[in-house]
Length: 244
Image (cartoon, rainbow, N blue to C red; front, side):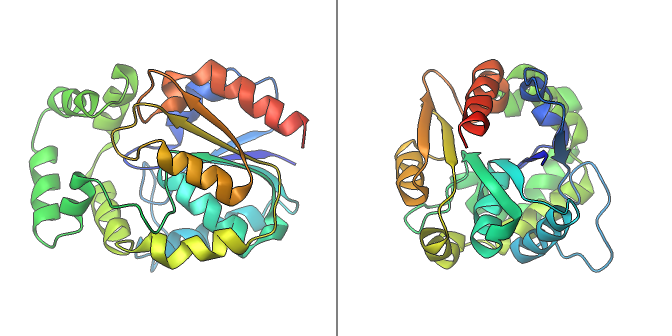
């Protein structure tokens, strides 16, 4: 079965390249979320439910359970899919995306969730040179190379999808946490940055306990461990898969 990677916001599937480059296995697929560097399907409204439905279909197409990995929003989505369709997921690895009723969205997410305010934020961002956007992403904790990619990939379509996704997910933790707590157990791994400015490591601890997962917190690491700790994370994933 393949290893399937699901990215978050405001990334594209290319954000996994540093980590995937350190893997020995070749049956690896990084799925691009609709609207993030790619087109969206017809009648796709970019809500959290739309992304779950889309991911389920993508996983069904493999015809066998996969090793599923998610970061940021990808982590939220893979947890929910694993809870809804346990038959599609052999092993689960996720991080930096808390699906937790106690979690409060970070200030920027809360701004995106406000009508007109979110639109103004993206209008301002898209009106800036790519270099200025990249500098802002670096300030938010992204490694420079990743920040440059994020700045170049950001467009109106991605902005619309981000706003719709976050506005559909104001209370996602309260809505979806119970399903994760009740799901069948499988080999699970949680990875997190100790200095994550968007979701503190205590949510990693809660997630690991909820999913009976091995927990790895990277010291001196921000939100984007797939880039900041690419080699270490790849080694941890291969150990995770080998012992499943």
